Amino acid sequence: MPYAHQGEVKYAWQQQGDIVTSQAAAVQNTWYTFLATQDDCRLMFAVVDISVANETLEVEILIDGQTCTGTVAAVFGTQYFTHLYEASMVANALTLNVTPQTLYDSFIFEGHSVRVRARKTTNGGAGTLRMKVGYSLLLPT
Image 1 (tube, rainbow, N blue to C red):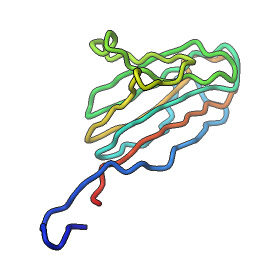
Image 2 (cartoon, one colour):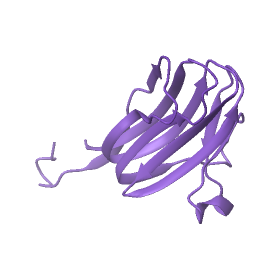
Image 3 (cartoon, one colour):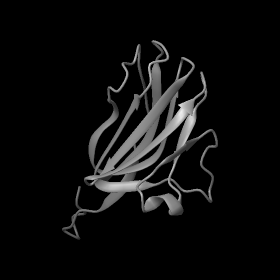
Image 4 (cartoon, rainbow, N blue to C red):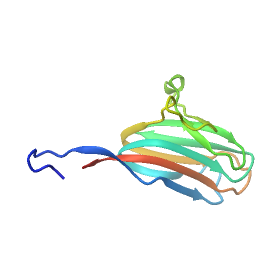
């Protein structure tokens, strides 16, 4: 809402509730959307895991038409955090590993249009694919 004396709208990043969702019996090579396309979105973190052994997981983050992907040979019940390191930015490659982000390992993506998907690319079993995504939206204050 605009301030009466200024006549302009102020915007601020407003944290949204984390998305925690799962896909039971995930099908090989089928993309599952965990964060539907959001306008003016800042992605804070994305964590993925699967409840079956011997699967390869792939995470895709689409920002303003540019795709970043990362894969990992997953261990049953292990959470994998998405990272984007400077060396991999040229190739639009995400790194998925068991280490959470730190203050010095920032993982903030933002854009006018942001989407997060994941899939398993192997067929080790009928495990549940889970993901947790934290994000904020640029909204009028």
